[in-house]
Length: 249
Image (cartoon, rainbow, N blue to C red; front, side):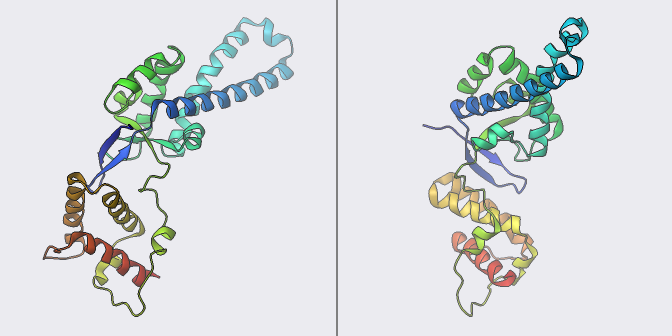
């Protein structure tokens, strides 16, 4: 059974995510490691071509060539997790990503902490320490995750990953009269978030998701200048989606 985690977003709404299992994280790490090794081999060949036998005879160059793969692995993770919002090529291939436990995207300081401790979690310990912590901690966190307040979640098939086109695929009603024209004050990301909550509620109609819906309605009411709380919360959210489609198409 896969482990899950509740993350409260910046909109003060809690959403449940599936944590990436150890196997998928390990495969992503191995794929990243292979890419780093390939890049190092190419660099070594270029340096050998430029310096010839001098590369292998100079103690200084030998030290650099020994240290370079560790530095490459270190900056590889930093670069991709910053530029690709928590995903290295390996994580992208396995459909997993790094997220902060407060619902925000990882910042450079978080990524730096994860990269520093990645050397301990994986390279220096042959992945034993990282695997042990991922397997045994409630939020599947290795040491780097604990220090940076992050974890890794699955995004393949994740209901929160939608594009605007997914929303526009909802069928509209001819001559439909919008109920909440002020929905135009919201944006595409807000609509994606509303649809995410609806789909999660449909998939897991439990008490936790009832509370998520209630929190979302409470958050939307002042934004839409609605004084009376809607009686049917789910239909209210569906109506907002329909209104947005009709008014923005």
